[in-house]
Image (cartoon, rainbow, N blue to C red; front, top):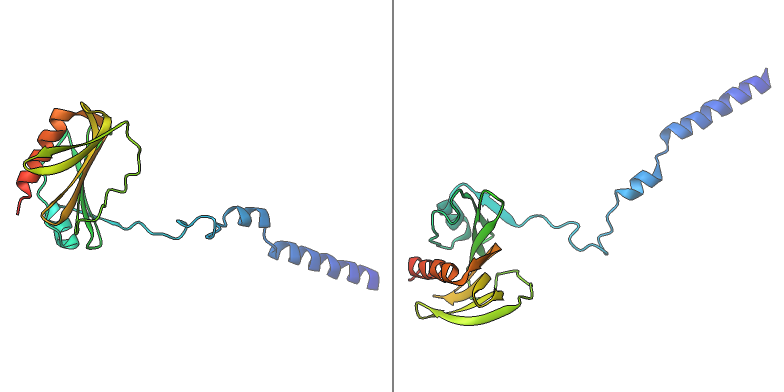
Length: 176
């Protein structure tokens, strides 16, 4: 009888311990090493807004932007603290054209792409740095105007004349 009771208690103890343990392999798979992944605990700094006015108010930066860039735009208005305002136009095929304006003259592009072509042009008496595959095919541009850094970028190549026309419009719209 003592052997049966002892065996039964041992079995209950083993089953209880098995039920309380966890599968460490699965738990280990979900662990993020913050030291090796510095972005592990970073939250998205961008705040989406319903309108350009709301984004401007949140960023404390005034920006005038075209109502559309592609023919069937979906437009996203965003701000980051009181540092940057962004307008992103997305076309029907997923192509994007983004306009950013910073609170200061500091580069807020976040673009570290090495382009085949980079050069300076003058648009409305403002020096604009353009980047792309060639002088005729551009992806990005940046300039400083009235104490603010501006940056535009596209996910598709834009003919230089179209890009420079858009930049001219932005410079005129945002002149102090």
